[in-house]
Structures are given as C-alpha cells and as structure tokens.
Length: 165
Image 1 (spheres, helix red, strand yellow):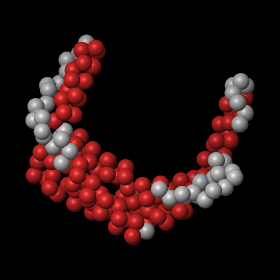
Image 2 (tube, rainbow, N blue to C red):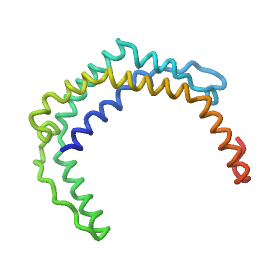
Image 3 (cartoon, rainbow, N blue to C red):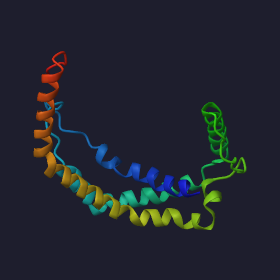
C-alpha cells in the first residue's frame, strides 16, 4: 500500500509543470543551440494564478486517479513478479489478493478520501521548490558550462573518432 501512496503524488506532480511546458518558445534561427533561460520557468512556477490552476487540476486528477481500477494491474504485476522470480530461480513473494474491480481508493482505505485534497494543498509548495531548483540550475550554468567544455576536451583527446560537434 505504501507504493500506492507514493504513486498518486508522483503522477500528479508530473503534470504540474505542463503549463510551463505548453508555452511556445520564441522562434529563433539558433534555438537548438541557444542557452535555456530559467527565469521564465521560475516566474511561471511562482505565479499564484498558475499555482491555483495546478492545485485545482491536482485535486481533480487526484480524485480521478483514486477511482481507477487497479485489480487488473495488480494481477499483471503479480504474474510478472512470479515469472521473473521463476526465471531468476527464486521464490516470488506471496500474491496480493485484490478484487478485480478494486480501485486505488479501495486499497488506500479511509485516508483515500483525504488524499486528493491533501495532495492539492501541497502543490504550491512543490511548485515553489521546483522554482528554487530552477534558480539553482541557473546559478550553476557557468560551472556546468566549464565542466561540459572540460569533458568535451577529455573525450576528444581520448576518443579521436568521436564527432567534433
């Protein structure tokens, strides 16, 4: 059950950045080689309106995900684990008995009703944390650029057949 508790937040958090990713980049001739500017990402992630939209989306998606049938998934996972254990010559763990029509909500139990709401309340903090990571990446760019140049020199010196671009 702990894996299920982890799956829902990660699935929802994976969707949080979609407003940022959905924005079109300004067309440039050298867009493939232009350095990425994190400031737009930081601004978007910290925007209260974007956070409110992401929070609402997380709450809705959380509720929808809680009602996804997982019985067939558990059966496939049990079969796969059993097959892999047989191939490895080991014993598979005991099979999990789950009703074919069971949902995530059924597996989580009484806390399931609070999960989507609790997850949604954490979305703004998660977005702020993601913005901090983007700021850290921006600050690390010069050092990363130097490291990339150093790696390129080392690779081309030790592997002359590698392409030079």
